[in-house]
Image 1 (cartoon, rainbow, N blue to C red):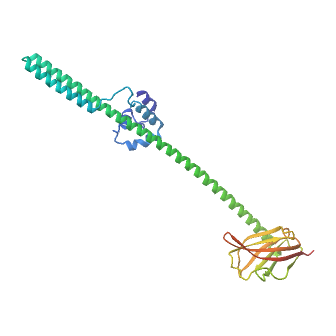
Image 2 (cartoon, rainbow, N blue to C red; image 1 turned 30 degrees about the horizontal axis):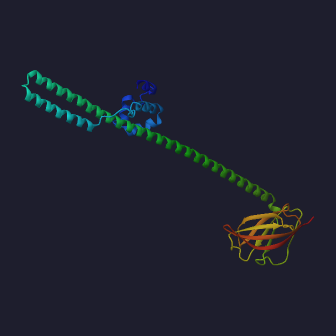
Image 3 (cartoon, rainbow, N blue to C red; image 1 turned 60 degrees about the horizontal axis):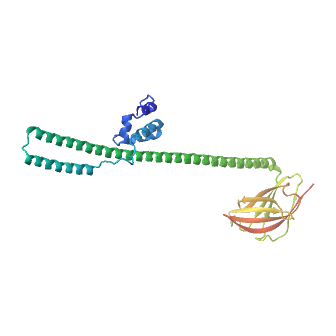
Length: 303
C-alpha cells in the first residue's frame, strides 16, 4: 500500500490518500460522487484504486465462510451442553469454590471464542460486501471511460466531416463567384457592341418561318430574346441549340421569364458559327421537364 502511495503521490496534495481510497472502496467516503470523476481522469489515483482493490480479493475455493446462522447454532448447542454439565456436576457432588470457578472460566472462555467467531463472520461479510462493491465500481468506471472515449471519437469524426463539407461548399461558392465575375467582365467589355434579337414564338410546337439572323462580322457575342404566349407557365426554362448533325452546340439552363415574360440568353460566335440550327425549348417545374417546341434558326455573319 505504501509503495502504491509513493508512486501515486506527486507532492501537491491533489491525490487521494490510502485511507481516503480505502474509505471510497468500502463506501464510507462522504464525498464519493465528487471523488469519482477525479479518479476517472487521474491515472495515478486510478492506479491507486486498483492497488487498494487488490486487498479485497474474492473468497478462495478452499475457504468456507462462517455465517451468522452457523454462529448462532454453535452457540446454542454449546449453551445447552454447558447447562447440562453444570446441573450434572451440581447434583453429583457438592461444588467447591475452585471447581465452580473453573466452570465459570470455561463458560467465559467459550463465550469469548464464539464472540470472536461471530466478529470474524461479521468482518468477513463486510469484507465480501466491500469487494463486490469495489468490483462494481471498477466495472462502472471502465464502462464510463469507454463511453467517454467513444463519444470523444465520434465528436472528432463529426467535426472533421463538418469541416470538410464547409471547405467544399466554400470552394464551390468561390468557383461560382469567379465564373460569374468572369462572365460579367466579358459582358461589360463587349456591351457596347452586343446586339439583341427578339422573336415571338408563334405556337407551342414552334410553327412558323425559319428565323434568319444576319450578324455583323465585328460581333463576337449576341443576345436572343424569346417571348411565349404563356411565359409564366413554368418557373424555369432551358434552351438547347443543335446543329444539323443533332449535336448540342450550346445549352442554357435556369432561364426565368422577366419583364413581360421574355427569356433572354447570350450566344457567342465560337459556339454557333454560320449555319442552320434547331432551337429546343423546355419547361421545368421541380424535377420534371417538358418539351415545349422546336424552332429553326439560321445564322450568318457578314464579312
